[in-house]
Image 1: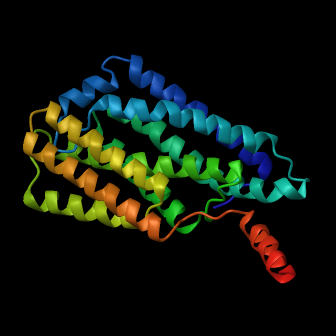
Image 2: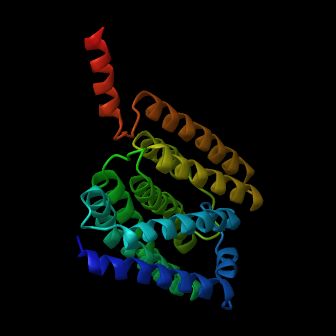
Amino acid sequence: MGVSLSTARYLAPASFLYDFAAQQYGLWSSPNMMDIHNQNLSFFSPQPYFIGAFFFPQQLFQLAWMYRLLTLNDKNPSQAKDLATIQKFVPYYALGNVCIGTWMFFWNSSRLDISNIFVIVNTLTQLWYVNTQLEPMDTRNWNSILTHVVSKTFAGIGVLDLLHNTSAAYFVGQTPSMLVKALTGVGFAALGASSDWILGGCLVYDLVGLSVGQAQYGDQSWSSLLGAYAVGTAAIVGAKNYFRPPYVSRAAPYKQVAQDEVDDRA
């Protein structure tokens, strides 16, 4: 799935504006998204302000990323590779924005079964992209950093969206079974074991948001278990990335060459 550079430069901002407009509709319509949330509480209902607190800084990163998309020069060899990496993500970014924006209309219409389709498509697409299509992040390249932050925060919050919407659509008022509790722990542990610091941090944030929400809604034991899962997932992410650093540095080879030259002179 790819698009031309000229198309990408229209598609990304247009999809961002569509999603932003849909979110404003969700906030200010009646019933609004919070009303629907409160009417459909379940065992994966998070503290809703955790989601809002996540999206605000994420949108700032999106704007910075789009600025790079619009201003990098594809005729400049030093910028062309970075631009190609950004451009590659644009179709998935646009699909995510369209899914999230369209989700809002069905969510606010209390058609959570239909809204769940858009959540599933978005979450699975973003997870597939970051795990199979994204090159390792170059810590000395802001274009690479921004692409990783935007794509992985999309995927990370998508996991929470999937759990939340599915439980609200089909399990309103229910408590989690032992199978759900076990699968939650195993699932987050598995995702954490394959995540870098960015995606892994999002997963921990998801669990904290769920834990706080479940405590607020009265299921203290499930909240405590989710909190324990957050600690465990953080430990897995930390250990994995400590022993297998996920990032690269474009300057590293030059440092090694310089060191080799010093050794040769000695």
